[in-house]
Length: 360
Ligand SMILES: *Cc1c(COP(=O)(O)O)cnc(C)c1O
Image (tube, rainbow, N blue to C red; front, side, top):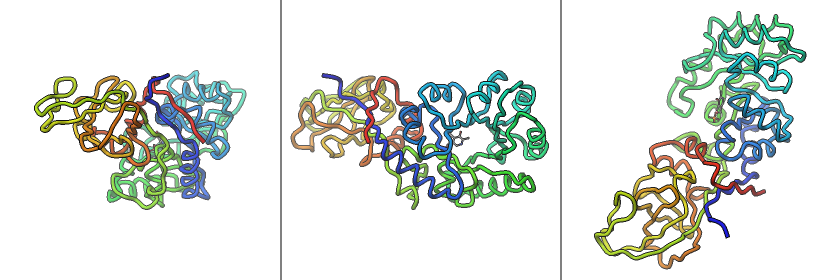
């Protein structure tokens, strides 16, 4: 019994990918980013897997951090976007959530908070992404303010984030690295620059603290082959099964809006997997699907609960046959590319409905 659609999450692959990140960062430290439900993989399970290995975890907001604390995670947790409201400072201090501070309002909220325990802060500098961060010229003054603040931990990390880290031939990252190093000169503070592409592809970006996210889940952040990224192991296998098989004649169409028409007598297999399970609706005709380990083309529109594939060339196909939508042999990145997006998005959009089955 049970609908066959499920996401198998290989926790040993998470450990493998984290160890790769940690080894590239050494002697610097690697903070494991588990925001957005660990990029769709399940934040609690991934955090529990990495807690024995990682010195700290990273999430986007205090609600995500509280979910991990409630599940028994005790590691420090960096809030990558800091606080959204001033009352979060006291909770952060109490719960050992670290704050990435990026503007004057956040600095003032920390200064004005009444805390029993000190709070640990990172200062984020805008070195070229122009989304968040203190201006380069503001850094020294902001750092002095935080150092002067009695209830701020004196070990303050200075951080930035890359705009084009995944473009290995773009010198934007080198300029951001130089900019941060110059801005922090003389402060003798630990630095943090690298996300996954920084760790894998920009050795000069590795520093005292590093922030791997996407790479922990085993897909490459690059769209060209890259030596270190080749060593990653995909963590999620999105799996289902054939639930119906039929023959149609040439000229007949398949699915909503009849978006695919058979040019020859064809065998169509229907699979229990749709956009309601996290498969991207924009995947076009021809997107590869593995049926019994063999690539076959998606035909017709992706529905909420089903997709259809052309198995005419496959030999025998029967109800119950195994289907893999993405995993080791066919990556989430590859499916994302067909659908006009990136692996980050298809994994992060995995809905609650799809059961996560944890192995290893
Ligand atoms: C999400 C995030 C990361 C992780 O980035 P990946 O590309 O997924 O490794 C690192 N730092 C910050 C500030 C982030 O928001």
